[in-house]
Image 1 (tube, protein in one colour):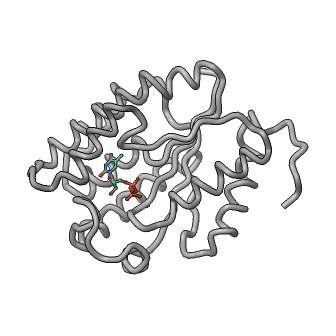
Image 2 (cartoon, helix red, strand yellow; image 1 turned 135 degrees about the vertical axis):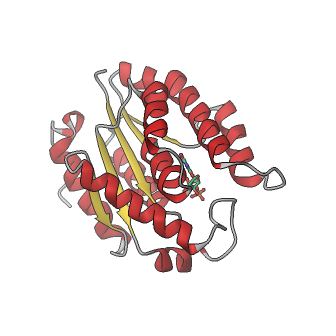
Image 3 (cartoon, helix red, strand yellow; image 1 turned 90 degrees about the vertical axis):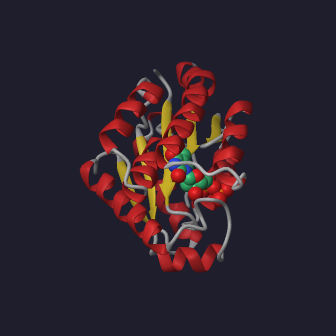
Length: 214
Ligand code: TYD
């Protein structure tokens, strides 16, 4: 794989989708070829799986069913989108990826984390993230930002989201060289500057320089 894969992670309401947009705009301004995708989704079948997982609440789903559906969407995305893009040397940014299932269905839902990691290996083993930004925010502030209600996951109890956050922090502590913690309570522009500074120093595709100073 000659490309570079970045994932964005964090609890619901942490502002990661705003950061994905700011990063995309920056890469466009700098004329750096890239691909922004998301999970669950990013493919036609994956977007249907997303609807089933998040919107079609008339179907109940067990935690294990959720795990397998997220993995199915992931396998499709990796084989048809992320893998080929990396093979072509592209910079790929994925809004949620392998750590989401460990954090949500593993820590949040109490699922078997070793099994989830083994499934991640199968679904995404050839395309591990090189770098991950974890947007950390208190669950209270995240809830305030996104409002109550929402999709199947967002409407879960605060205690679920608290376990997800703790799970993310545990994942980050175990892999400090890959996962960069971002204080998601900081102003969006400051978070973006921090991300961009890190990317310029860490991502080989961006090392050529010549970018505007921030
Ligand atoms: P997100 O992209 O944050 O959706 P939006 O910003 O449109 O609300 O995430 C979708 C939801 O999917 C989020 O609540 C977390 C959940 N999710 C999991 O529970 N497990 C997973 O493996 C993935 C990829 C997502």
